[in-house]
Image (cartoon, rainbow, N blue to C red; front, side):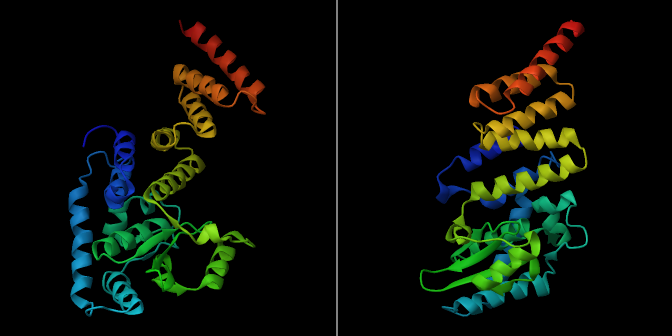
Amino acid sequence: MSGTPAEQLSQLLGKPQSEVDLGRAALVLAQLEYPDLDPEPYLKKLAVFARSIRSCLPHHASPLSAISAINRCLFDEQGFHGNEADYYDPRNSFLNDVIDRRTGIPITLCVVYLEITRRLELPFFGVGLPGHCIVKYDNGDDVFYIDPFHQGQLLDDEGCRHLVASVLGAATLTDTDFGAVDERYIILRMLHNLKGIYLNTRQHRKALLTQEAILALSPASADEVKLRGKLNFQLRHYGQARKDFETYLSLRPRAEDAAEIKQNIEAIAKILAMMN
């Protein structure tokens, strides 16, 4: 597969959901930081973890036995853990770094968990709780919530609420919050996390690369187009910034900040005229 990471993500996540390879998509995302990264060695490592767990699983293992075996391999033997000491380290968002360093944030540790359980053909799904992703086992009869960031801790509905409250304060969760999310959602959430880190540390060039990937997956998002315009302006890509602002107004002609955006467009026109 060729093209920029943004283009590759669009191709990977544009497939029917049953054909989407979450691990590969997460490693393509990591190419934003590591352009020469080869996903194959890391996909093989995930396969090795899965084979190790499979060899320990009794035939027709109960859900709790399967969860226990997965947790023992990942957290006790392999040493995966949540990076509480340096939560906002960008490396926590890159699956290759997470596998190499055995540490990450909730969503990337969920990706590791999901990719291993997918290879084991077990019914695990991502759950996008506000502020903290987890996974759930759901075979149609039994449902268990697991928090890979906290060593595979088992949670019930109330435990999930306490977890979200510990991150965000008081929060009301709906049935939708406990539902399974797809691969596109997971990759977009990873990208938004990474973008937030780059914006907070004023790494505008890296934020722009991440924003390009977000827009490859959500091209009609007016707010994301506007943000790309602001990043392009910060980086003095004035022509592209003007295009982005004009696109924003076409997507949202009655936006509350329409007057401000029009002023930006006029300012860019003057800058470009002076440059010529």
